Image 1 (cartoon, rainbow, N blue to C red):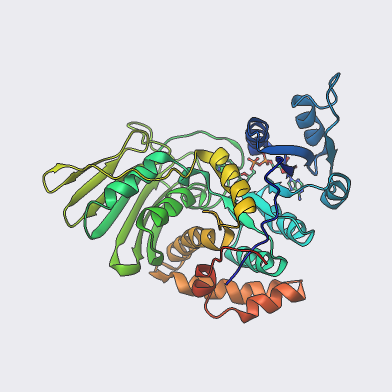
Image 2: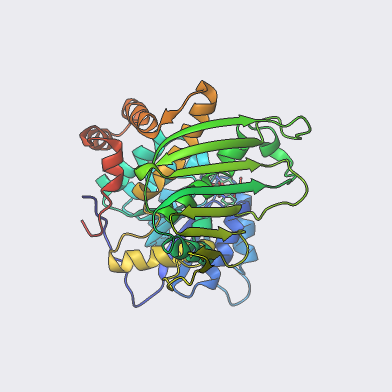
Amino acid sequence: MTGFRAEAPSDRPLRVIQVGAGGMGQAWLGTVAADPDVELVGIVDLNLDAAKASAQALGSGAPGAQELAVGTDLAALVEQTRPDAILDITVPVAHHPVTTQALFLGLPVLGEKPVAPTIAQSLSLAAAAEVSGELFMVSQSRRRNDQLVDLRQHAALLGDVGIVTTEFYKAPHFGGFREEMDDVLLLDMAIHPFDSVRYLLGTEPVSVYCESYNPSWSWYSGDAAATALFEFEGGVRYEYDGSWCSPGFETSWNGSWRVSGEHGSALWNGDDSPTSEVDGGLGVPAPAASLGDGIAGSLTAFTRALRTGEAPDGEVHGNIMSLAMVEAAIASKNQRRRILIDEVLEGALTEAIAAETRDDVRERLTSWGSVRSALAAVGSRVA
Ligand SMILES: NC(=O)c1ccc[n+]([C@@H]2O[C@H](COP(=O)([O-])OP(=O)(O)OC[C@H]3O[C@@H](n4cnc5c(N)ncnc54)[C@H](O)[C@@H]3O)[C@@H](O)[C@H]2O)c1
């Protein structure tokens, strides 16, 4: 059983340092500023000018306002400001070093998705959270959507669910790195619906067969389209069809969903309230608790977890399987065969143990039985 320290005082805001002041960092700074339960005490970025400009935009140093601490060295800023927690909004390749450093400085971390660029690094981070006794939560913001919660409630009306599909057809011209990267759709976007279907079904994936390809007119150099068929526990099939180069009748950024069950079907277009038809009539789902909205919802859940000790949705162990779905889908399309998720997880554990530089984290990784059972063992309280 894993656990984490829950020592955040409830009589004052949670004091945080944000690491990473790039594009998504700006959205987080705005969200922190709007949350009365959280207080920003510093900004760290390798690009000091970006950190300074962000602090200035927040009014730091203006007449009558305090100067916000900024810097390039996280440990120095922690020493200076004594925060309660760290937000890691850096680029994916920096997630492992930044979050590991923060956890072993004795601080809990809320980080942007993906956990890390590889499952191996993600397992190292989960083990680091266990060893340090600090909470590491990943913000997978598209899961925090009341319509998705509602779709899950509709799905509960259908009896046995056997089939779930997502169609995702968009035509964005991003420019920049996305148009150059390999497996762009699977790596950069598909993790969102993969994570959502795990929430929807409440079960875990077993295997995947995937093909990805690049339509003749695509303006991406990597594969901008993919079809993946996952088997979930209990034999449920999840089919994902996606393209990032399909103009015309575009779907929502959340994709368009169908859930097919024994007594009926539920539909969600990704933007409006879901509906269902059950035994020939309209389904009326039971209300359910909200997970909050986007990154603001993640921040609220993180703060609450640090005060109550209850493991939040997004605790690192519970998030890694979404990344495993991406990595397994890419392995399947590369090897042109059905891939077992456990194959990918166990291979990643071997890789993680070989690459680990901290003895205590390597020892923890080595002590795990199967990765699947280690990831399922998310505890709820206090070292
Ligand atoms: N949830 C979403 O919908 C969503 C959308 C966009 C981006 N993201 C995620 O947010 C994260 C950040 O993306 P972005 O678009 O802001 O990237 P970005 O490149 O715009 O900004 C990243 C910032 O991190 C800084 N940085 C990099 N390494 C660092 C380190 N070791 N220490 C301190 N600072 C460092 C960079 O200097 C840069 O300012 C990524 O993980 C990305 O996947 C999520």
